[in-house]
Length: 195
Length: 110
Image (cartoon, rainbow over all chains, first blue to last red):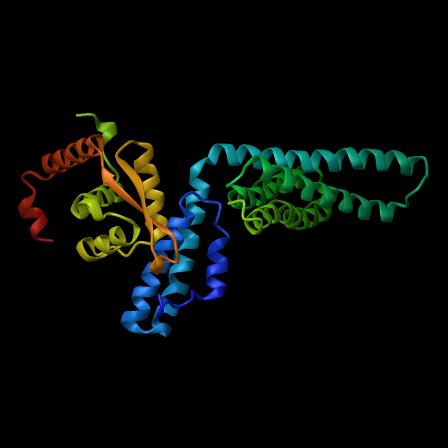
């Protein structure tokens, strides 16, 4: 078709974040068709403005769709991930305390750096593994994980009053690393054309 | 009447739009029908969320059409209401008629 107007790149890329959802190809076809109709009727500029607005509305709708598909499964996996990350860090902390008691390897200051590194690495790995286990629900997982992580932090703060700063500081990097692990999978699958 | 078969508001609108469109019901036309007849401007993603749910319940069935150039080579997905879906619509509208009977005056004077 000679008067086919290319879709705006940035909003199309945003929309492709949901490429692993069922019927994504059909949905993309629908917005493409309506975009072309609007471009012919009202001009390219109006069609582009409509497309941007439509993409943001669809991001909300598709996020809700992903969250509502299997909420219990996603919540269970997210809870397991938070437990796994914290359990690993806890076991790591135990061993580092043992090392420091023996005055080997690490000083009390570098100990925290190592613990943070362990937690970040674990979060990336757990994020990656959970995304593998919950294909098509990576985004829902990435949204639910911070809620459980925050809840864990609040409970942890209540029990370990002396480590409030450390526990709170651990939350954001942990979430960031988890996102990196879980959402990287989503992007890489999309790029590989596996969807 | 099986109360568990009563449709939600959006499901009701979707089924009615598909029925009105007959064999032309797909994403864009359903969205346009909802806008023209019900004044509801719904994102296409929300329409597919609702259609997913209706298909799982057995109230609609779908089939894939041919890809077209205007759609960037993507196919259309057409929907039609099943007998079970029509029954659910009947039950829902029967319940609504029952509940609104005698309220015509009150509803007109809003």
